[in-house]
Structure formats: structure tokens, C-alpha cells
Image 1 (cartoon, rainbow, N blue to C red):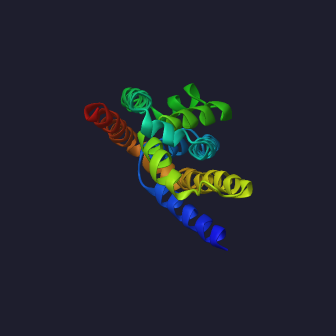
Image 2: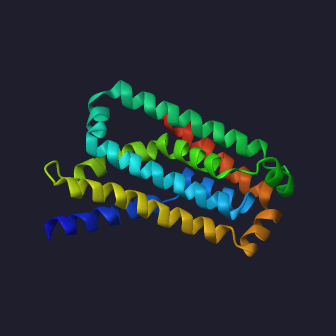
Length: 205
């Protein structure tokens, strides 16, 4: 019973983590509105795969390694910051490109959408901080194997449920119509947001 209560608590913390705005939200919303519903959903699945990976790494003790090896932690954060900056610049450069041209030119395959989302989440400083510290503290070190497996599945399912729901929401006709009218403004704002996130990490080093 205590283990089930702990799993419920972990699920709640995971949900609070994914619903907070960040680069994942920016990527899934812009993909769903600017490319297609399918691409948006597969972007959500990419985030889910990354969440499962991070949960597995935290359980395996990588979070402890990062906290006791500052150089490793810093290298991961810098890589994540540079990738966010690159994404922000790319979004800014494509902000004025017509939506139809963008959809045809970048007809994102399912695999490409998953890979892009996975890479964004795996290099996201927020994910590193969450799974490397708070999350690893909430998982007992002496729990049975099924508990660890359930935590990994929970991490993936919570992430998939939230981001795929966002993709379905933002791919609705009304959302796409608004996006088409305000595309340059929305993508410029999202690009600046990603640049700011990456820049802040660099400045804090």
C-alpha cells in the first residue's frame, strides 16, 4: 500500500513537471499547428520516450553521478543550452515563411518528429535538473523491481498523455486558422523564448 501511495505521489509530481511551460510545449504546439496533427502526436511520443529514458537513468543512478561530477553535469547543461539556442534561431529564421510552404518543405516524418522531440527533451536543462535531483530522491533505493519498472512506465505515460493531448488540441482547425494569421508573431515569440532559455543557462555557468 505504501508503494502504491508513493507511485501516486510520483505520478502527481511528473504531471506537474510536464504541464509547466517550456521548450517541449513550444515544440509540440508549433509542430501540431504548423506541420500536422500526426507530426504533433509523434512529437509527443518523442517526449514520452525521453521521459522514460530519463526515469530509467535516474533509477540507475545517473542523477547521483551528475550531482557528484560537476564537469559532467555542466557539459550536459551546455549541450542542452546550445541546442535550445539553435532551435530558437531556426524558428526565428522560418517565422516569415508561408505556412503552406513550410508544411510542404518540411513534411515531417514520424521518425523525424520523434527524434527531434527526444533530442530536445534529453538536452533540456529542466529535465536534467528534475530527474537528476528531485525525482531521484522520490524513488526508494530498496524498492522491488516492479516498482522501478512502473515508475518508468508512469513517466512515459504521463508525458505521452499530456503532450499528445496538446498536439490534438493545437491541430484543431480553429487553432490552425489562428496560427496561420499570427504565424510570424507566434514563431518569433517561441524562437525568442527558446533563445532566452538557452541563453540563461549559458549565463548561469
